[in-house]
Structure formats: C-alpha cells, structure tokens
Length: 253
Ligand SMILES: Nc1ncnc2c1ncn2[C@@H]1O[C@H](COP(=O)(O)OP(=O)(O)OP(=O)(O)O)[C@@H](O)[C@H]1O
Ligand SMILES: [Mg+2]
Image: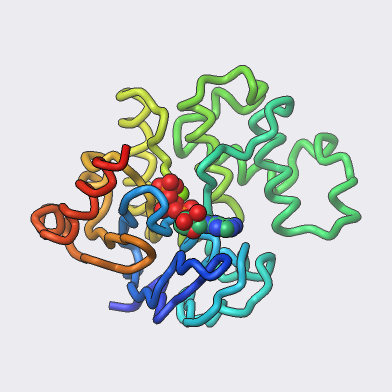
C-alpha cells in the first residue's frame, strides 16, 4: 500500500532542545493515523514541519511521493496537504461562506484577485464548491450566518470544511474534538468518516482516546519528540513505555 504521507528520520530542535528526534512513520493512503503523546511531546511541531511553518533540521517529508521537505509552505498546498490549527482560524465578523471563499482565494489566487469583490459573483465556481462542501457535512443551513454567532462545535466543523476545500487529500487535524460536547463530537466523527470514505487521508492529533479509536486505524505515540510506540490503539495502550509516558505526565500536573 502506498503512503500518502511519509516521514523519515525527521529532527527539529528549538534553541538546542530536540522537539522532534529522528522520527519516522507513514500514513497509508485513505487511512487515519492518530499522533498522540503527552503535552509538549512534539505533535504540533510535526504538523508545522509538514506544512512548512518551520524548516526541518534533518529528515525527509514526502506527500503522495512528492518531496516537500524544502518546498515553500504555499507550494505544499498544491501537493494536497492541508491542516487545521489547534485554535480555530476563522474570521468571526464574516459569514461562513465568506470565510470559505477567502480561504479559496488565499490558496488559488494572485494578490490582485484577493481585492476583487467575490460577493458580486453569485455563480462563481468557488462559491458553488464551498456550498457543496457545506452541504456534504449538512452545514449548508449556516452558509450566510456570521461565524462569530455560531456555536463552537459548528465553527470547528466549518473549519474542517475550510481545510478540505481546494482539493486537499491529506488532512492534518490538531485536536479537532477539543472543547466539543458529545453531540458535536459525534457530528465531527461522522464528518471524518465521510472524508475517509471519499478517500482522504487523515493525520489526527487528539487527546480523546475514544474518538481516536473510532476514527483511526493506527496510532503513533510520541514522547519528547521520539516515537515510542506504533500500532492499533488497543495494542499500544498496553505498552509499558506508553503507560510510563502518560503516568509521568500525570504526575507532573
Ligand atoms: N516555535 C517554538 N519555539 C520554541 N520552542 C518550541 C516552538 N514550538 C514548539 N516548541 C517546543 O517544542 C516542544 C514540542 O511542542 P509541541 O507544541 O509540538 O507539543 P505538542 O505535543 O503539540 O503539545 P500539546 O499537547 O501541549 O499541544 C515543546 O517543548 C515546545 O515548547
Ligand atoms: Mg499541540
């Protein structure tokens, strides 16, 4: 099976501290892998390295076989990799649809066309695509609502729609279920299952293990930037090193 995302011998230090230490793992095409580990283990840093927020110190990152290791961040989007952030990045004063369209512009367009009044083009292809994506998640009823007025769980799901637009095929989600109530979590779970059934590949950072178990085939466990275990959650959670890593983290708090 081919890997949609392949990370080999990846390392990154901040001020001499190894945040990611010789890390290797793969996410097979169409599968979901969870990246788990205690606070500060390096999970978000992996996302930042894959999306090009920071340069790597060492290692190779392939997205669908394309070497993106030294590719500018903007260009990586064209390989199909997209992400959500630990904190939602939507503009509260704009409508849902406007947020999605701004995202489309940032991805596709020149600076000049950013300034064109996209609201005047009712039948624009991007608008049709955005409405279709909303409808696929059952969120089309919110298209013209102002984002700031919507419940947190709906905003998170809209942020997910934003990340999937523009042909994303490898999606990295940083704590998608954090702060959601059980109903919202179920809706998100269904969204992610639907994305997988459409062939998308997911790399998910998530602390909710029930959620991980119901969405992801495999987990990769990080501790101090190193991979300490990998496999199905049911197996990995029995692992001595994994238990120690989590107990250690609990004792600190
Ligand atoms: N820009 C940065 N500058 C300096 N240190 C950083 C930077 N980004 C991350 N780090 C450090 O790298 C380590 C890994 O951080 P990271 O944010 O990747 O952890 P995490 O696993 O996502 O944690 P959490 O579960 O709390 O979100 C931490 O020690 C953190 O302080
Ligand atoms: Mg993090």
